[in-house]
Image: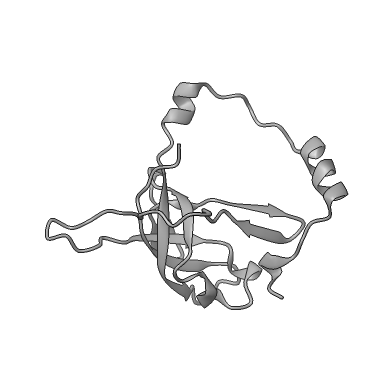
Length: 138
């Protein structure tokens, strides 16, 4: 069983909700600034010399003028949660795509994958229906 497939007991799920540190309340206008789109992970590479980092190439629906896919590079600290990082290839997940780019270990990260983590278990937020890359989360 992969780490991401482990189950969290129901009682623990209920306790987690009451223990979350609440962040500052934001306005709807602030939330509306977030551009969250479904992306399909095209490839995964381990970032050399980094224990936690993966370099993901993601189809977020953006195309070159000739119609070819223009993938985004996302650097994410999720490596420790997967026994086989290649199992991420082909998965659809939500990505924050208007986050300011940041260089991490020499790679420009052009967004952020959205997932949930509790007590060392990562849950990928995978849609239950197959949707085109670039579909916006509303």
